[in-house]
Amino acid sequence: MTTSTRSGLAGHELIKGRAAGDDLLMLVDPDCDVPLTAADIAAACDRRGGIGASGLVRVVRTASLPGAERFAEAVPEAEWFMDHYSADGTVAETTPSAVLLLAQTLIAESLAVILEGASVTIGTRGGARTATRIGDLWAVDMGPARLPLRPETPSGAAEADDDWPGWDTAVVVPGLDGPRAGLSVTMPGAADTHVVIALADAAELDAAGPEGAIGPGGAVRYEPEPSGPVALDAVVPLGEEADPASGEPIGVARMRALGRSAGDAPSTGMSCCAAAAALREWEGEGAPESYRMLVPGGEVGVHAGGAGAAPGGSIILTGLASLIARVTVL
Image 1 (cartoon, helix red, strand yellow):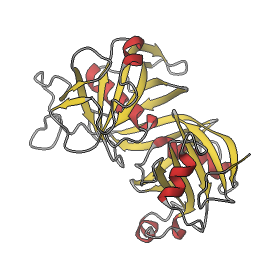
Image 2 (cartoon, rainbow, N blue to C red; image 1 turned 180 degrees about the vertical axis):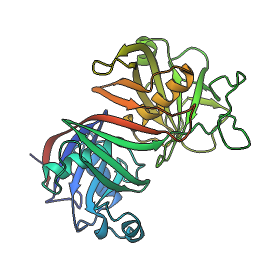
Image 3 (cartoon, one colour; image 1 turned 135 degrees about the vertical axis):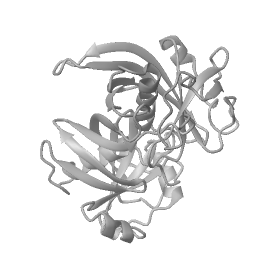
Image 4 (cartoon, rainbow, N blue to C red; image 1 turned 180 degrees about the horizontal axis):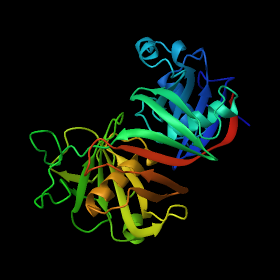
């Protein structure tokens, strides 16, 4: 397939992939030879005039990426780096979907041998991330979730008392009646604080945040007003089911990434991580450690053991990464 985006990417092949509810364009550029500009990226990601995607990832050797010299020395096992950009051409946060697609691209392009059960370390601007191959799926360790506005003891541990209501922000969302209780969650490498709200059913989820309501100038309101950029996520808990292999309980929820205050598309994968951490916090003692998150276009698994109630535990997202098209830019 060929397409014209009238950009400096002319003559180069882009691979389109989908993972964790997101779609990205992958540019295989091991030696960092392609002079990318924000305009080039925005043109390629434009859903009307270009190919269309929520962002672009340059697959590049860490040693070849300008500015990554110190990272290459500190993490020599990270041969490959995720040079990730949002659809508007700005530098993007570290998202699980991008990590999964980069790992899948390494295999598809014969850039690395990653056997069943083996892992690959990938460099990102948020630090090193490890992706493990599990059959047709990938599991990526996104690091620990934090609840920045939850009370802490002097030692820094989360305060476990009945005075903590489980939320820290009141959110007024267009399409929903009245303010909703939101919980702030931060993830390593994320540019935003995620504010997660729980909704009653699928009808509320569909009604929440119509187009244009969340971004700059939108009608969504927070109390207290956040000090930095925010990604708003909505989740509908659907109960629990038993893991077929272990019999352990798995939480099930439907989730939507409603939008970012910065304006560009939110990462559904990162939002799933934040939503799972919020669910575990809300459910308290005895909550499942793993969740099946149903998102538009598919589902992902999130292991949130240790999130919230026991700070320091990593969030691990598991999902399918599919490469669906190769496009030569005219």
